[in-house]
Image 1 (cartoon, rainbow, N blue to C red):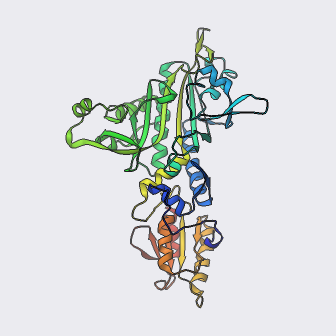
Image 2: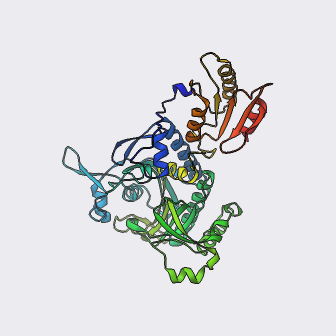
Length: 437
């Protein structure tokens, strides 16, 4: 992509309404544009990052055997009345009526709808377990939307649902999701810690939030620093190992403020290992047994032919929220560096261009074409602008690698650098190797 053709409305001034780093950067680099309070249009740069996050989430869900589907954004109120949540959910739910006067709603979550789908399709334990997920827009009418995509009304979310015969089987599904979330965040370049959390309006008796540390986080967290040292790669993908993994994490103290008890914290965690800070929730998983299946009469035949309520769990990741969370974790001092896995481009070529000298642009164009042949996603800054402004702009955009074509370029070698690191002079062949690693 040539920068001159990219729809990227970069602004020089800091937006007054943006209070946190991610909101500021996303508006400045033209990743999003506010449509109305808490609702945003995703412009090409931001949309590209979000879709890369979505694909990683999808791959890790597929790995554990979850099956992708798609449910609608608009739901009937009837199934919510069956579960008892229609009146209990509160004003966050956007309630509407169709032209026949039927009560509908814009789904804030999908426990009711997936239960309705399951109960009409599965009748025997022989079809269990089942893990189903979709990635879809949600709407919650926040009373005070703020912080850009971190707390908005309309957001893009992966929500998954498990169906099992027994509590024991259900915990195995829970452990698979626990593992999947840790692997997902690892691939996104984020260190997310599972923490015991309140179940909130979803309900249930087992719940973990996945939290990344950030000064701008809304969650107060308390943890033993040892929880940050656990390596997920040492666990195998089998029921016994996954159960050990969850116990290893949950045996070390790590909770949000909803679960915090100072006396217990001081008793279980040595002073020198205590961490008290803020964090951002990037995922939340719940096991709630028959909270929805029982009132909605979602029954299956067990091994003895008796009717029993299916055991359920739900598992959410805010895909659009993760764009903001990744910025919060990586943006400092006007320099952003996207993790390679989700960067909008693999590399940017920055040539020094003037009205009287197009030689560097010609060299850059040749490099651009050669990299494209290698299936490297490259951005070419073909805009006539002084180099100081270019560097400032690309420090904000955050493509992790830069090829600078200017006065230092000679003997078919070019200045190559990783953002926030020293540059080195490399041949194009060596640059290709660097970018392919």
